[in-house]
Length: 485
Image 1 (cartoon, rainbow, N blue to C red):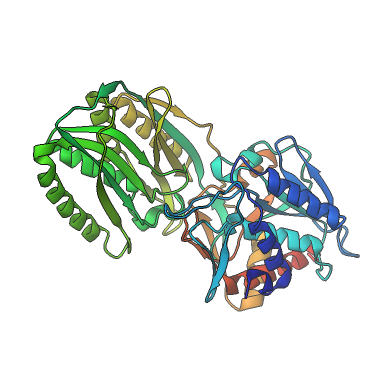
Image 2: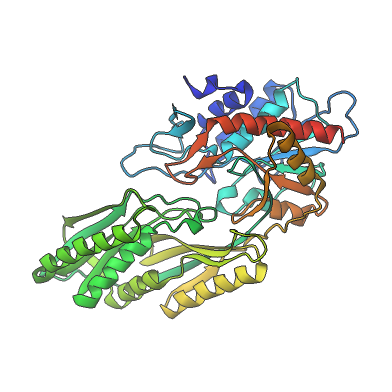
C-alpha cells in the first residue's frame, strides 16, 4: 500500500503529492507554483504577496455566510536532513516515503510531515464539498524553519479571518495555546593559516547516528550534541598532548540538535597510540552517559593525509574551549505550566567558511522575552571571551496563552465530543508563527493542533497514521462548530 491509498483519502492524496515537490527553506518556488496550480485547477480564489506567501479562500456553505472566517495555516518549507550514507538532492528529488506498520516514514531523509501534513489538511478542506463550514482561508507561509520569514513579512491585506488554526503541532490529543519566542546568536572566529607540522599523524574523528531532533520540542530529552562530543574529545586530548586542528564541522540547521560532527586534527606520531587508547575509553564513557537515550552512537577515527594548513594554535584552542564549555540544553523550566521548558539554547552548527573564518550557529528560545534576551546575552558573552565576533538575528516574539479563548473552547469541546477524552491544553517550547501573526493582527483568536509525529527535523521523522484520521475529523468538527456558533 502507498500513502495515497490511506484514509481519509483527500488528506493523504494531498500529502502524497506534496512529498513529490521539492521544498527546502529558501527554495519554495516549486511548492508555491504547485499550490497556485492546485488553486487554478479547483477554481479556488487565491492571492500571493511580495514575500511569496499564498492564501486561498473558500466561501461558506449556504446558511453560514455570517459565521467567523477561519484561517487554516501551515508553512511550505521543510527541514532537509539526511543520513550521511544517503544520496538525495532536496532541490530535485521527491521524498521516498513508505509505510512501516502504523507509521509513514522516509528512506534516510526527513519526511516533511512538518508541515506537509498541515498543508495537506488545509488543501483537503479547500476541495471537500461535503463539509459544513463558514468562510475559510488557507494561508501557506514561506521559510518558517529558518526564522519565520513568511509570517514576519506577511502582507497586511493577505488574511481577513478572526480565528486561526495553526496546523503545525506534533501530538494528537494536545491543543496548543502558546509558544516560545526565539533568537539566533552567531559567533565567527577569524584564524590564521599555519603550516601543518611534520612528525604529526593526522586523523579524522567523527560521530554519527545520534537522534538529534527539534531544538525546541526535543531539547529536554537529554540527547547528545555531536558538536559537544567532538569538542570534548579534542579538548581532553589537548590537555595531554600537543594537538593541532585543521577542520571542525558539525550540525547543519539552527533549529536541529546536531546529529553528526567531525574534526581533522594532528597529534605527534609518538602519542598516536596513547590517543587511540584514550578514544576507546572516551567512547565507553560517552556511551555509558547516554545509555537509554542514544541507542546508536557511531564513533570513527581514520588516518588522513597531512593537510597543507591548520588553524593557528591560539584560535583552534579558543574554538575548542568555547565549543566544549558553550551553554547547550535546558536553561530553566516554566513555573506556570508543569513540564514545559521555559528557556533553552542549542549549539547548532560549526562550519569552516570563506576568508579563513569559522562560524558557530546557536539558537535560543524562551516563553519569557527578558529570559530569551538574557540567555542570548550569555551566549554572546561566552563567545566574546573566546575572541569571536558575535551577532544576533532579529528574533521573533512568543505567543502568550489566552485561557479565555473562544476557539480554544470550541477546539477542546470538539475533541472531547469525537473521542470521549479531554485534550490537554498546552504551550510549546518551540517557535510557532502564531506569535508573529498576533503582533500583526492583535484581534486573532488562535490555537494549534496536529497529528502525532516523532523525530521531526531528523531522518527518523515519522507520522502516526491513525492520528491523521483523528486530526482530520477534529479539524472538520471545529469548522462545523464555528459555523454554527
